[in-house]
Image 1 (cartoon, rainbow, N blue to C red):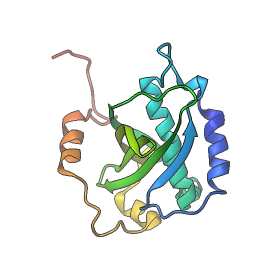
Image 2: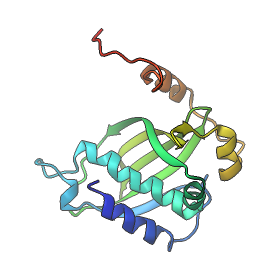
Image 3: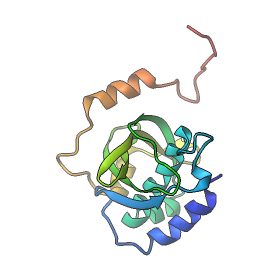
Length: 181
């Protein structure tokens, strides 16, 4: 909720920016604000994922997919995330969030996102996102029907499959007891 106003502003401003194809890269220029930092005076590690939401929204709005998703009642939900940090983003620093879809499978759409300053990667994340409608997953076939077919050379790296398999929790309809192993 802490980025609600920024997200609403982005939904408006992204619609005014140049259009993109959903399989293209989005570049969203931003500046580190006081609400983004922690007591160490740099962007809080958890804030990176929240800020990256803005990058995904930018891509969805500029490609026209966001309007189609809303019309169909589809909502995006994060299913898994991993991030690596190189350098800290500091208060008032300008940066861009670079976003692209790196592939999809029967369970998720996979994004790669980077925080970039002057052409240098400060952090990189991979996000598995599900689309749901009325609490049920949207199928890959439905997604491709709305997004269009991915480029022929778009293939998920093998490590993404391994990451998802090794990191997955049971589905919401199955038990997931809390037992340390």
